Structures are given as structure tokens and as C-alpha cells.
Amino acid sequence: MKRLWSTPEYIRRQRRRQKKAERRVPPEDRGTGRLHVRARRVELVAPHSLCLFEDPDATIAFCNDIRKALARPHTQVRIDLEGLEKLSGDGMLLMRAVMQTRARRCGTGGNMPSDPKVAAQLKESGFFTGFARAPKDLPPATGMMLSASSRRVYSRMAADLVRFAMRNATMSDDVASASSQMLVEAMTNTHAHAAGLDRGPKNYRRGSAKYVWYAGVYCAKGMAHFTFVDLGVGLLRGADARHFLRKMGIAADTYGRATLFRDLFTGVVGSATGIPGRGRGLPEMRMCAQQGTLAKLEVMTSSIVGEIATLKCTDISVPIRGTIYRWQSA
Amino acid sequence: MNAVRVTDFTKIPGPRYRHQGPDSGQQFREEYLEPAFLKARKAGEQLLVVLGGVEFGYPVSFLEESFGGLARDHGIQQVRDTLVFDTGSQPMLERRIQRYIDEAEQKKPAAHA
Image (cartoon, rainbow over all chains, first blue to last red; front, side):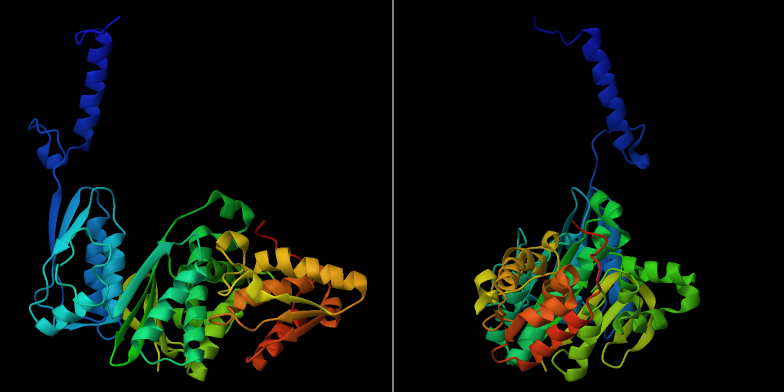
């Protein structure tokens, strides 16, 4: 039998739906009878320099703002890049990564830098790959940006990036191999931290957070600049480091972030997990950095930035959630 | 002498464990290396492992899981006695693998199925 709109069952259902819709309405619109969710509009102005390792504080603060704005559903973020004067491969990749990590029904848009050189750099960097409405006059790319789920390690994607770098920059076979292996190790670390791999089989199976990693290469003046961005918990707050500190019975602040950073790259932390064979990836990265196959390998995580070859690190005033590696081909 | 070629498995070696992604060290060990190793042990022969021909070398985790994992399962001495390496143009690779075999502990990892 056909149900009438006036049946009590339908009325009850309709009231339930109305109450649910009212709960979704922002506080300022409640009581006005407006039940639809209006997109929140946020405009963020980029700093003059978007170079992560050269101007970390301004770049991180700006990317943290984008991340924060996009964490709330129904938000449209307009990024004003007009005043941008300086741009680097790592800054672009981090911005791309935070723009992609967003809540439901969020969108991003923006303008191009007014400086033609910086605008050209942005266009050819591969930044706009995957955008629904990218600028129309994109030149041939000299950069490539890839991303995938933290739950998987894709050595073939690492190989694609390295092949792209070999086509667009001068690079020896040793450097190419070291870069590919570095990318695989970085993906493995992201996977381990994200999925709780080091916290035992129960925690792993339960599956914790799922992150997305981003890897990119930007070729300029015959040199390839690699960046790997993991927006997870970060190396110093990862499962390995926490397990190590718990075992020692010391809090991270007491132990010192610089000391923990050195212990990670000398293999002290990894081998403390008790899982046979573990803890070789980061020391291997350091060895490649010392040999020069991963030139100028630097890492930024939590509130420190460090040079891997020398294990020297400095504090940054604006902390970043995640880990970022950067190195170049010579 | 029997031989196992890594290039028959993959040209781009991947992560440590099978669940981490394709072309893993665990998969290589379980599907290629271990059966050939057991066959060679049964016949009392040595097993040649051909490592050359991969595109961008070997990630540490892949090597450690393949050869260190084999040593953890079957004993360091047996693995050292049985495996012979052809590293092609990378002579340092053999030393690295020997180190992973020597440092392999005689227990299986607690995590990961």
C-alpha cells in the first residue's frame, strides 16, 4: 500500500532528519531557519619565501595554516600566492601535500605569483598535476610529484621518480640507486609509523592512522632536488622512538630531541625494537650521505632540522607534524 | 650448481615484508630463495645467487629480510656454506649480504605474519 506523507511514521522520520540537519548547522546560523551547510571561506596569504629548509618558520606556519583550515569539513581555502618571491622544490611539495590532506567537501584554489620567474617555476614543477582546474598554459614539466597511501611501499614509484630525474638532470648510477633506495626506506618508515608496525601484531592488525606520503623531484640547472614528505607522527614521535624511550624510562623532552635524532640515525633506536634485522634503514641513509651519493641529505621533523652526514641539528621555532627528507643529485 | 636470479623475481626490489608492498624481500625469500636453498641442501650442492641486473640496486630491508631472514630460519652456518653470490658490477654487495647473514639472530620476528 502506498504510504501517505501525513502518516505518523513519515512525520517522525522527517523530524529526526530535521534535528540531524540542525546539528550540522554552524552556531551562527542556528535559529535562522537556514539548514544547509554553508562552505566556510578562508583566505591565506603565502609568505614571500616558500623554502622549507631556508625559511622554515614562515613556510611551516603557512602550511600549518592550510592544514588547519582544511581539517574542517565544508571549507574553501583560497591561497594567495601573489607576493611569493622565492620558491623551492621542498616548499612546493609540502604545500601540495597539505592541500591534498583535507576533510570532506573541502576545496582549494588560488592565484599565481606575480613574479613571472616564480610563476614559471611553479607551473613547470609538476605542482598542478591532478588538479581539476589547472592553469591552461603549462610548460613541459621539470618536476614530478607522486603520492600514495602509507600502507604500501612502492619501489616502482620510487624508480619512476628517479628515471624522471635521470632524464632531466645529470646523475650518476650510484646517485640514482641511492636515491631510489632512500625513497623506498622513507616509504617503509612512513608505513611502519603509520600502521603501528613496531607496536606488535595486535596493534598492527587493528590498524591505526593511515597517512599519505608524497615524494617529488624538481630538476633545475642540471641538478635533481628530491623531497619526501610524510605527514604522519614524525620520526621523533614514531613507534620506534617511543618504544626506545619507554624502555629507557625517559620522557622525550628530558632525553633531548637532538640526542634522539642522533640515536635514530646511528641505529641505536631501531635495534632497540627487538625485532631482528630492524634498524638498518636510517644508518644506511647516513652512510650514503657521508659517501656523497645522497648529497646534502637533510631531515626536518617535529621541531628540529638536521644534516644527516654530520648529525648536526638545530631547533626550529614552529614545529611541523611529520617528517621531511631532502637531498640532491650532487 | 643451481642458480637463483633476482631479476626473475623483480627488476626493482621493494620493501622488507610482503604486506608492505609488492616485490618484497619476504616474498623473494619464500617463493624463490628458500625452495632453491632447501633443494640445494638436500642435494648437498651450493646455490648461486645472481644479484646483478636490477635497475636501482637493493634497499637494505630487502637484502636483510631475504638473506638475514634465511639465516634466522635455517642457521647462519648452513646459509654461509650453501650460498654463493654473483654480484655483477657491485662487489661491495656480497660483503653487505655476508654481514646481514652473520648478524642474523636465531629467532623469528615477533610481529608480522
